[in-house]
Length: 634
Image (cartoon, rainbow, N blue to C red; front, side, top):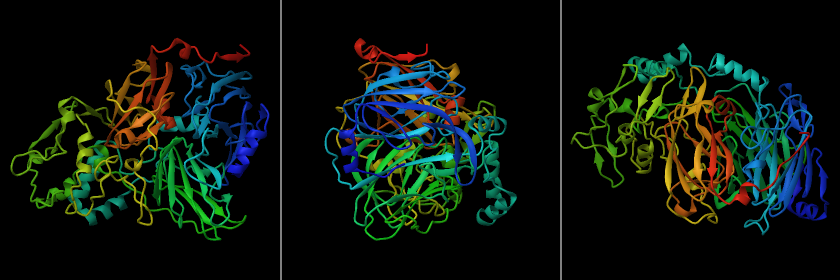
């Protein structure tokens, strides 16, 4: 990655001709040539063979300008089929680069020419959509300059592209996960952890907790399917320390891209506030934060203003706290700053299994818990008697006791109505047993209601409707400051006119951890019918996460309008992250005819079945036929 000031970019774009053969740095407008090559990846911890673009991993930073037409000649120098997908770009479906959906892919030795207009600005990326070439290193960054001035000032900018390089190839990782789903879990709980929990919780409670997780073939440490990787920033491991230079007082724009195969990161720069100005390439109303979480495949642009003549560490911990990426902002080469220690690993809770329904039932068992309501009144002594008498019948004949929330006056506690159960929703468990009926949207309502659960053993956390109440995954800033929430994101300018959706499509995110199968509505991709949409409609997608993993859902070709309660200011994204035990909504203006991919962006989840083909029917024929494909060598 090269250091590029805004002034340099403008001058370079104006000065270059049409053809730019990309080297290891960035290139400008017009026609581009990219090769897909075998490469050697050196993380500082290990070296391995991988896949790259133009002889390197990550590949070049492509710089486009909104309004131009680009022609990109991609030559496959691998001994196997390959492809390039332009992640987040709005383009004709034939140019999207997904084998067997938008085109056949690129055979070994052949060249495919992409040609499409650039209709947007912002930070995006590109990657192979073939096999596990992306986890093996086939990714690069895209920066698109807007037609008009940016709504914020900055003096220089850097792409900060994160990845999770693993010493094993993607194919080997997949084989190992299929053989043993916890093959890479190096945080497994031990008998010593049980003894510690017994001291804290009491022997009976600790035993009960272990049995509950055991029944689900799960552990509270099942946060990252894949551990043992080395996080990278712009291709460099923590010890290799990628460094971006600045002059004290400058505004520095950092374009964060998470190109990992499987890893969410929590990012902070100790000593600096970060102002978030873009999410997934779209401008948002600025939010000043101390830390933010970036899902796999998301991008966030932030502006920092280091005033002092010293170095600052860019620190990106994995969500499971098993590894970190590290880079440096410095006024001079060679300067470094203190690197923080990894924080304690979080543990999943029953809330992340969608089973606590916003409640810490362990504390309630004491029968004396008091809920302070938003209006200041208290609801004392919620005995939850129904817990001992209400059962959920499981398909395998077993019963799950105690999911009722009857309060002493016989009324139903709001936010725990279990409406989804009446509608027949199901939770697929690790042993294929199904737990009936979870619509987590009720939990979100409870989380937003501001109930004070302080009497619940001190385990209650500040509510965030994008995490299950009392989730073990809900983040907090290391310095106690502001952590970015999806709720904070507001579009700077609405891209679409606000209107009610024409229909709703429910997508239950399902899986079988023991067999390492991931699916949607309990059906793997190879057995599923396409999702059919009508051109011109506005569809509301309802994601119900019935697994214990967080899934970054990515719809190709059309924008995803995240419903975070901000109405017409709801942010526009290309990836929507869905945490365990939650229900999340997004809406889509169906304005792109053709065939598109829709999938979890965790590489090994998508490969085993959490993937769908979307067919948009109707629409202007000229759009569907736009951008004729040239496929040299056929």
